[in-house]
Image (tube, rainbow, N blue to C red; front, side):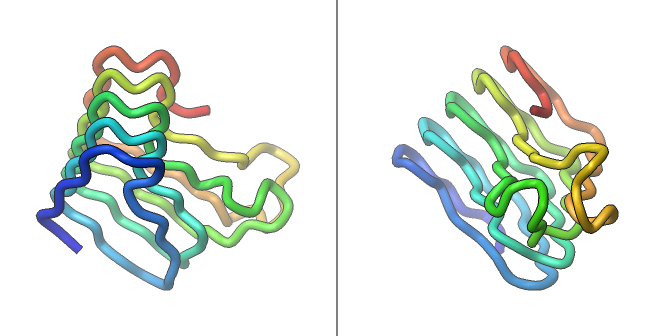
Length: 116
């Protein structure tokens, strides 16, 4: 998916499937921009998240039932959003490779917590 604009609402989009690339999508004034339900591999490139409560939420099933494999976010901007990315992954999560998060070239502006 690419070249989409979401403005206002509870969830910009809720997504789950196998491998996807998501490019050049802008979110403004959302509660949650992306609710990541499950996937093997997800690449987000060129996201613009502005004035939302939460950016990418990848905790759909909690830390012991991971449905998200790897999530990669590159060349993206998060602005005026209290929490950029939410994950439940920690040192005791089951499926140790699931929930991997890679961030590259991310611009944060007025973001209190980059990754929670």
